[in-house]
Length: 446
Image 1 (cartoon, rainbow, N blue to C red):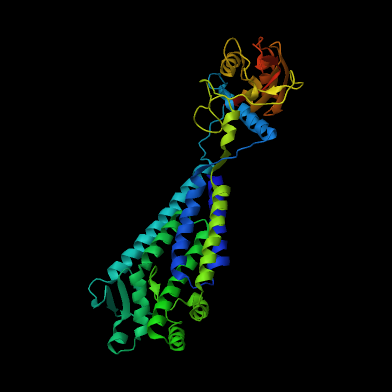
Image 2 (cartoon, helix red, strand yellow; image 1 turned 90 degrees about the vertical axis):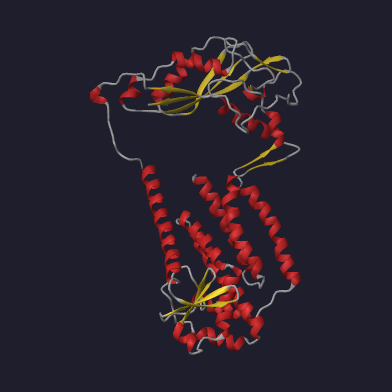
């Protein structure tokens, strides 16, 4: 989950940076309206997607790397202490709640509070329309309210002060502006981003997106007014006259969004050529492709499939690259005769066998021999010991060593049992016996 949140945040941050560099100061407002929520959805989904990228040629060093990963992750045995009797006076009982549980509970609580606030605000707006006088205006309703408030809109409703409307103090530009919000259904964008913030309230990127979405709504509405009235100075003066007015309603789209009045004035005097707009949009394509490659949850080379052998069923026998069986394909390693160095387990044509079985058979044998050390039980010591050993050309085990330590007591127990292993049937490469290196994890868990 942590890696997902990091990838999602970085991806959203990248898409926000691209917006700032390519589109922020351009007048392609309708495109920006699509881009902002779409880039958020993209950032949320991409880290969950598995992408296969085909690499036709792969180096021997990379083959060795994947083979090592496969050997490490292929078989794991777990030694449990649950069958051991621990003296009562040495048993520690705790009812404490883990920090993970506290974090989850805190997240759920805050999320519910955000959702409750969103529902309350929407309900408050809907209730404010009940029993009010209204006037039909195209596909919208002008709701006349008694409160002294800046004009605002939500859904298909435009809210205007009744006294000012009756006296004719509300300019046509204001009504055109708010009607554009209604016609473009900008309230759906607001509800969408508020829902995302309710879920990802801890992520500052989403608050930046909310600000840009609201700002772009104003650019669209301003553009509609200017196209109809063709009087930019008069409209700008009207905006300044209403800058100090406010409303207590949340979520609504206000006529004078005071946080970006300066930017709105600048945007009114700008225009973006078609060539520039097209170039900016095409520049987005490589960015999207790079983001998919970087932030998707798994990017692998298809040719690696041929490196990994078919795995027989057993205790914990899974494919470390994909959750499906893969056909075994011999690997062309440039060896004149028998290699001087030991071969990784996954690269052998014929795997070494233990008592007619495989690593899984060996893991069951180890499980029957190994004991949870009393000293480890007494001090509640647990962990994973990663062992490495070699099955030589004669099937004898040698060079048993710990490559990742857990605790000296656990390490010694794992090594002593594995060292006592009977002979194996040796593995082969190109029909000749070779030394095979095996990585073998042993988990001690209370």
